[in-house]
Length: 250
Ligand SMILES: Cc1cc2nc3c(=O)[nH]c(=O)nc-3n(C[C@H](O)[C@H](O)[C@H](O)COP(=O)(O)O)c2cc1C
Image 1 (spheres, rainbow, N blue to C red):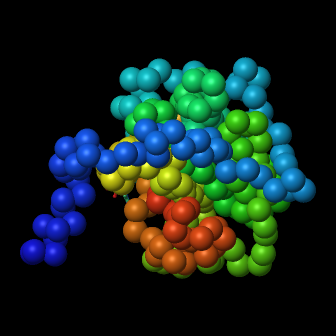
Image 2 (spheres, protein in one colour):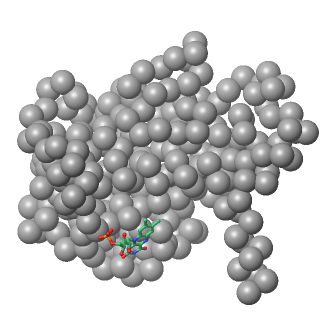
């Protein structure tokens, strides 16, 4: 029980008091980190359908909230690029850049507008998009190809502690945290804020799924090292934090 209680401390806000005596990098006038992880110059990119160009069926907010539930059974139907574009925008789309480029507004809120996430997209069945791992370039509203290899989806199932329904998803969104984006401003208070931020992102996805006949189920139970290895991130300055397989609902 003592062990459980130690980990419980993370949920409390005591660190705010301690923060008063700490100079965050922002207070030290250290330049802020990039708003988005840069894509390699030569990376293949796919333009997504722009927010003003898609024809997503109107669903009221009340209806989306009423219908929201976790889905672990998906049909074999693929997602269209337009549907994927909408879902990525709903989760992490950029609404505007402000404060001379040091902060963002996105479709989901974030403490201090720090937005510490990157969105990886494991494509399984998307019309006209080859299977593989991609990353959402939210500023450009594009997908950037990371890599593809045989058995990638099976590796994702294994990294998600054998939650087999991951294999039947059309795409699996995997959010990584780049904690320094939040730490730059909030230092030791950041872990709780990053965790709270992640919940908002996934809830946006849940509700957006209702507009395109799709469903998702948040996954918090995954193997950190295996998933970080699949994403090819260092596991220290960037690591997986949340997973959401998405597919059409039968
Ligand atoms: C933070 C978080 C982590 C979760 N992790 C898992 C998971 O690893 N596997 C799973 O099958 N469901 C997972 N879920 C889904 C919950 O089990 C689900 O939300 C809950 O049973 C309530 O069902 P509902 O979403 O349909 O209301 C997670 C949900 C949240 C919010």
